[in-house]
Length: 107
Image (cartoon, rainbow, N blue to C red; front, side, top):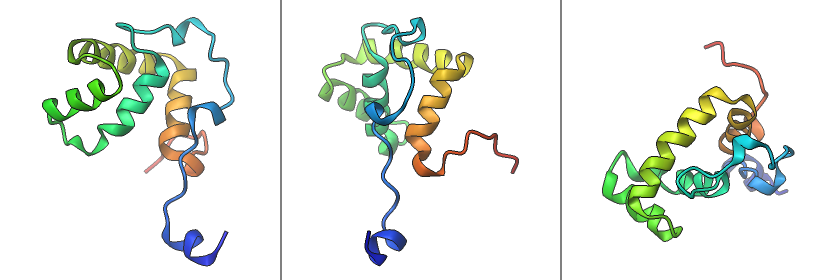
């Protein structure tokens, strides 16, 4: 890795397949037909949408998920993530990448 990459480019987020977890547990069952992998990919795509529902729906539809299914899945996955530690850890690893320590922030 060159000095420019090391100091000026953000660290690469891990891909879902790079995260070591048991993807076969019941907590990974699709919600409204949306898998956890789809939820993660769409969530990453809507980060810059700023809460714009039409923009979020468009990103979901680019991933083959209808707006109605996405809205239902979004609420369901968010709820499941907050109540299921393995999902929360997987999301943290994806979003925080190399900065993820597994410890709560004590700001």
